[in-house]
Structure formats: C-alpha cells, structure tokens
Length: 320
Ligand code: RI2
Image (cartoon, rainbow, N blue to C red; front, side):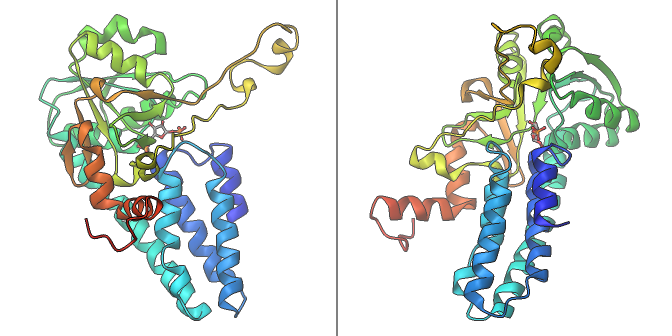
C-alpha cells in the first residue's frame, strides 16, 4: 500500500492498534523504498524522510509508530548508493515486521502463564497482544471467562468480542461504566499499551486508568501486554506523550452538537495509568514490574539513550 493510503487509513483508524500501525508503517516504507526511482542517494534519502514524516504525523500517541519508523530508517545516512540504501531499508522493514509478529507470539505465551484455570479476565479496548494472552490460555486448556468493555466512542470492544467469540471463549460484553459493578467477579485485568513511559506509566485507550484504579481498589491484578517497541525513549529526555484528541463527532453527531452551542465535546483517545496501578508489564523479553521501564528503554531501544547522551554532552559512543 502507498504511503499516502497507509497514512490515510491510520488516521481514519481503518488500520488501528499500536502494533498493527507500526507494521503498516514499516510495510509502507518498504514498498515506497522499492518504488522510488531516483538514482541520487541524497534525493532517495530525502524522499524516504518525507514519507517517514507523513506516517509519523498521522497519530501522535502510539510510540510504536515513531519507534518502527526509526528502526526502519536507521542507518540510511550511512549508505553511499541508492541501491545500498534501498536494500538496507527493505531488509530492516522485513526484519521489524517479522520480529513484531514474533513478539506478539512470545508475549501471548508469557501472558497466558499468568492466567489460571478458572480465571475471569477483564480487558478494555482491542489489543492484539492482550487478546493473544487470553486466547493462548484458552488454547492451553484453561477454562476461562472474559469481561470485555464496549469502548466508547469507537466501539473497539466489538472487534474484541468477535475475536473472543470466534475463539470459543465465554464472554460478557459490558458498557464502559459497568466495570466497577463487575470487578469483584474478575480475577485479572489484561490490557495492551500504546506507550510506556520511563516511569512505568502506561498510555492506553481512554478509560484504561479508570479500569486500573477500580482494579487496584478491588485488589485485582493488572497486567499490561506490550512489545518493547511501545516503550518511549523520548520520555527519558522529559518529553511527554501527546494524548490525541479526536473529532467531536465521534462522540456527538454534528446535527445534535449544532443545537447545543454552550456544549463542548472533549474526546481524548487515550489516558495515562500510573505505574502503581500496574502489577506487571509482559514484554517479549519477559515480564517486568513497571518501575523497570528504564531498563527496557536502555537495553532494547538503545538509540534513545544515545540521543539522550548526545543531548547532555556525554557523546554518542558512551557505552553504558
Ligand atoms: P495492540 C489501541 O489503540 C488500543 O488502545 C490498544 O489497547 C492499543 O492500541 C494496543 O494495541 P487504537 O489504535 O498493539 O484503537 O496491543 O486507538 O494491538
């Protein structure tokens, strides 16, 4: 798919979910690299940077998107010919897509081990990896039941219940505001993540922090399933994750809004759950307490650290 089409589909949420967005961006860069005709390496690089910027600008919150783009674009400046630049980029894109899929499988296996036979799990929104854990537990023969929220305003819960239904998992579908009414029937909350910050806070679909707060009050564990490329290196440097605020008409139809001139619709797509409400983050490298987020950023997203060191004058080759 072209860069423009991919960007459009990510913006409109036809392609959605932090992992899927990341893979779609890598695919678009790969296809674009294959089609750019320029034989001048500087012009090729410039064109790829333009494409990368178009993709990154589509949705501001899921760091999987800029992380994926960064991984695919890395080293482009060292290529001396267009062919070398093209081949390198196509190779990195393919490797990213493959390792992203592999990470989903690994997290599903690790996460499933935290689910016990007879457990009831609550999930919010539609997370490929969170569902992977639940489905893997079911596949391994554990008898489980799920509560899935509706997820206003985009109703991603509908995708979740279809997937759970097709997997043959007993599922209860509830409105978002019913979480506290059922939390005592729940043994474990599992959600995905759009971003994990250096202090272990998890940015995920709006309502996740209410779910986690409710779970903490009821002493129900909260598990976050997140690939390492959802951790945000820029938060080391103090940058905040921007919470996307989407169109008002996702919440209230324009014709009704027009009759209510004193009403402003607010529609943040994500919220922040502090580390203290999270028991574990399950990554493809294993499960960590959220307070260890810095280690993941340092070990697996080292480029963020290098940039940090450069920014404070330690130098890019500092080897810690
Ligand atoms: P996976 C989604 O965002 C949801 O917030 C979900 O929890 C998160 O991405 C992670 O999804 P949106 O694109 O990568 O629906 O686990 O706004 O599939």
